[in-house]
Length: 281
Image 1 (cartoon, rainbow, N blue to C red):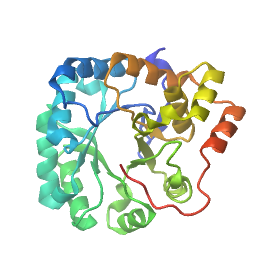
Image 2 (cartoon, rainbow, N blue to C red):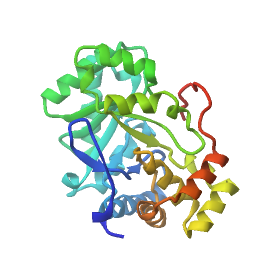
Image 3 (cartoon, rainbow, N blue to C red):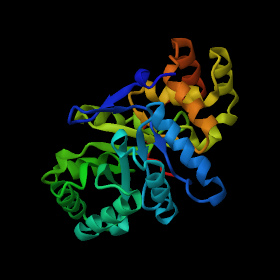
Image 4 (tube, helix red, strand yellow):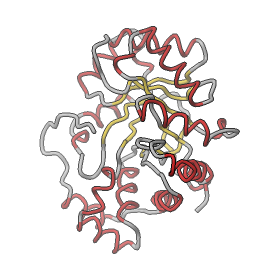
């Protein structure tokens, strides 16, 4: 498995980033696992999984601190993503939250900064904060997380809203609701989509139909689930807290799903038959 074989997706700017990255939700919570988690993140970067996603919310910044330690001396190898909590997302609060994240990450800038979900502050306020951060060179791109079509339409109508780069949402074989409206909307708008919890925090591994497809392909259920997300043209950011899991996840990039496998997955996990509210974890 070489880093050179990694697939990419294209941002609205034309920049390409790795299609398979690494999430950090629940990392940094147990000191006994710290060195193992740091080693896992570093291995993922070695293998080309160099989109690293975190958030100020994750263990009150502890995940960002862990990422900062893991990426020491390797910052320029990584496309680094973090998120601002909705309660902090007025103009000044967005800037202050980003500066806090940068401090914990030991970084001078983020490649992508997301509104974690929509809260009480007007979108204009958050966008003003993002604009301030871009002008200061503290972020390269901005985007959102957990926003559905109506929110996206509203945001793009705000002056400067068309500079949005990404919508990060819950999407996996068991959560296909975005295929009805949001995913086509983002494709039409040329926005990148990121999938968090692409294996449903491990719960998909218990579905026998997925296991059957995996056995037929000589792969693991996690690899099939990740390969399916990648086949939709969506970036996947599974959490990788151990070396074995990183290696397993990386194998998804070398897995091509044949038509019969895709058909079996559609039967086991049907696409939405009608409008579906955006799901969150």
